Amino acid sequence: MKIEIWSDVACPWCFIGKRRFEKALEKFPHRDEVEVQWRSYQLDPSIPEHYDGTELGYLSERKGMAPEQVRTMFGHVTEQAAGEGLAYDFDTVVVANSFTAHRLIHLAAQSGKADEAKERLLSDHFEHGKDIGNHEYLRTLGAELGLPAQDVEELFTTDKYADAVREDIAEARAIGVSGVPFFVFDRKYGVSGAQSSDTFSQVLDEVWQESHPLLTPAAVGAQATGSTADDADLNGQACGPNGC
Image (cartoon, rainbow, N blue to C red):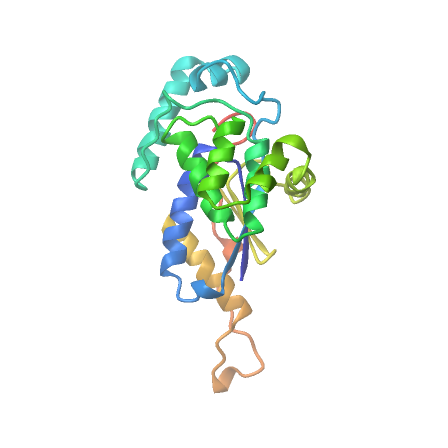
């Protein structure tokens, strides 16, 4: 089974969704036969590499959200994150463009370290106040991930992997993704938002059963029927261009 996950490292629900999905995958009996591919998405491509202001200021000034509405949203998201063992600190979040960070994930994927890169970027952004658009930070992260220094440096001197990021974003639009995280199972079922771990477990089981039907002697030649992933309400909490 192949699962593609469109998300942005500047999306708080994407980190929560990652944790919930991982919990479900850990319990999935066929997890060793699951391939997970991280796909790029940007909630706001117009952000400069470094935005001179706070996350609250960015959302209220550039997105037109009332400050009190933003604070309420921060409180809700922080509470949900804590339930997954994540310690969000929106007071220290550094607003930055995520494009080069996505290119780093594509580079890391060449060494089988895309998930590790994604994890670090999300954690550093939401829990540790790191500037994910800063070149020195990305150099350090690349070194800690064991990526070749020359390859990391090319992210700042060339457009390497830029087309790959743009293609991910274009493909997301083509299949109707309007918010992230967005999970695609075997190119058949789409699951929107940071669903519960139980929901992810249900989808994993149903998609697996559909592609690997258990046939009894009485049912040879006929596929068992039942509910499928697209029968459920799979629109969970997510972030879109206008906010989370």
